[in-house]
Image (cartoon, rainbow, N blue to C red; front, side, top):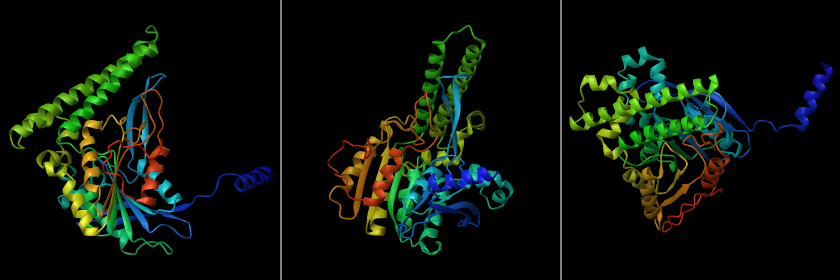
Length: 395
């Protein structure tokens, strides 16, 4: 044991550097009385940045880490694997190591799913939640960072609202509602009308499953493992195709009846299509049109730094769902004295910001995503609006 102690002592002295931040478990009080679990990540550096980040979730019930699990193909039996991502945790730690505090919180839909009785009493059932509910929660979190409740030695006077996926529709609205939110970072968002985005995502997922099937068909079909994997993948493909078909039927009827589809059609459709979080965007196209929110945010703060980040390898949000907004942002920010805009494409990263393809996978946020975010928060200079080449800041 003495040798082990000596070894550990030497390892500490010569090994990895100590953690450069501390994390505090807390809750944030929402406008209607919920206490959402949250994590405040604070750098240990003597002079942390005056800019703090608040993370805004994508669709679905998510915890404060933005945890998501995705099934992707693999090169070894059973030829598919489930990867779990925690993008908000990864980004919070990377920001803290660079001196930026951050706050991440549990999404209301997850909280209400775990505390059904409490949410039912206040009318906050998961199936009734809409985007305005999530916007208000994000605004509360942003205000928390600005009111001086930070640990001693940490002073925050500017907040960066960092939205992911659906959160990209909320981040500029939070900046418009909360003076002091002077940075908006939209990570892998879509800016085209629903339900087209969701149906395209389901189509893309089915393509990936079929890619895996085609790969397995190139293997020795005589082995039991290959046959078992092939059967499982085909079942996934059938399930995905059926979900897509039922979602399409629901949306067609929803639009044709002015938001009053039959109970039979609604019951057949997956919950990912029928919940009010999604139908809000179908009912009101202005939720997808965030241009006015950007202008309001710039006026409220007298200064606004905006960065849209997407990637051609993101099959959840392919280029047809973001290029028009990138063009608009570049034009709106060009020559504008208070609206500093940058649009960036980062190659070879997935929707969850990891470097991944269908053959091999990782589950931590890619360094290119982190470096790009840090460069923006440290600089925030105007990006040439006349150019639409959209180069990544990091190759």
